[in-house]
Amino acid sequence: MSVSVFHRVLMSGLFALIAFAVTPARADEASSNDKFSQNEMANAVSDFFGTTTEGTAQAVERVFSDRGEPNAYIRGEEASGAFIGGLRYGKGELIRKGQPPVLVYWQGPSVGFDFGGNASKVFVLVYNLDNIDELYHRFPGPEAAGYFVAGIGVNYQQKDNVILAPMRTGVGLRGGVNLGYLKYTRTRNWVPF
Image (spheres, rainbow, N blue to C red):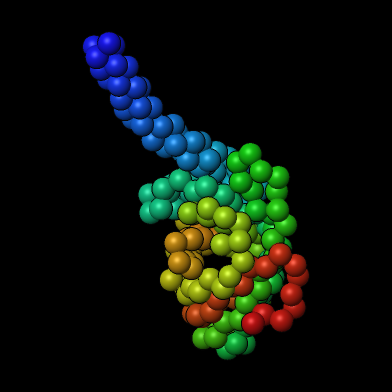
């Protein structure tokens, strides 16, 4: 009897150890399956901007070398204008794997040595978005601290753990340096604060 009880306890312990060892690997696989690969993003950005794959691939490659694989992205359009103080308004869709698209709006003020206006297509790589509510906040970021790759302007915005990498291309005449924030919301809001 005691040998049989010992075997049962030993087998139960082995099964628990195997189950414990296998579970984290499955969790890691699930989280990596929720992310977008560099190829997926290069194709999506190229299709959205209507530009050559080589040019957009360079911009995406730069962001991926800085931040890795995003777990969401926003594709949309925006308009902005500035004369020392500026305003920016946009609208787009938040895309996550296995989830329906969600309509997102953004607006925000800026201040600095900035003049002109422009209309842009915007593609935002989103990092560390575990819950959609984490997006509906103010994301500060300097505009001129970004860089241009193949005609696509890129900069970063961060709020807590969530990082946004907006890529913009468009028409208009706007130049200078500014500091501001974008506030992402569920509904259109004309008041940028």
